[in-house]
Length: 221
Ligand SMILES: N[C@@H](CCC(=O)N[C@@H](CS)C(=O)NCC(=O)O)C(=O)O
Image: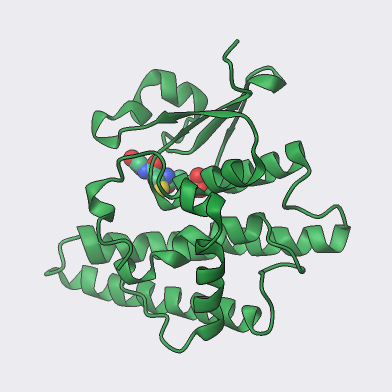
């Protein structure tokens, strides 16, 4: 049996940082298996046996008979239930947290992911890419405005405590400038980014796994 209770397979990406933030915040005992996309480890039969979708992050809970969890939102939820941290027991507060977590998984993540693809990787000269870039950038900005309205006069997305909803949303919102999505005028959102960015556990998580991929070099701008 491995020494750590949990093995996390991940990389330095928006989805990859989410469980790292939780694990660093909670102090759960884990070991890290960095996944190098260029080596295609995440497409090997051994990895696909863990996650048939061939993507990171993936977690194996050795303390629960090697139970496997993929999908970062499900992973944060699993870790919250395992540890009793960052997700309220109160049914309404719990639902509120999961609503904002789902908005990240179904809205902000996919829209920002597509915005990044069309801004950074797709052939820009093609008319279809220009149209897609405009669509995804506008929708990402609209979602940021929803978050900004929600955060007006409050510190966290759900209830009065930092939760798995904040942990899920943060990496995607923090990289707004790399994606080319403006947060101008969204002061509550900017304050929330700074609030989370300043947490020591978050600072540690964002350095993992090192080294950061080259394509994220502009991430902090
Ligand atoms: N919905 C999945 C998305 C996972 C995902 O897209 N992971 C990306 C990194 S952020 C990945 O593994 N990309 C490598 C690839 O697709 O080859 C989750 O939230 O876990």
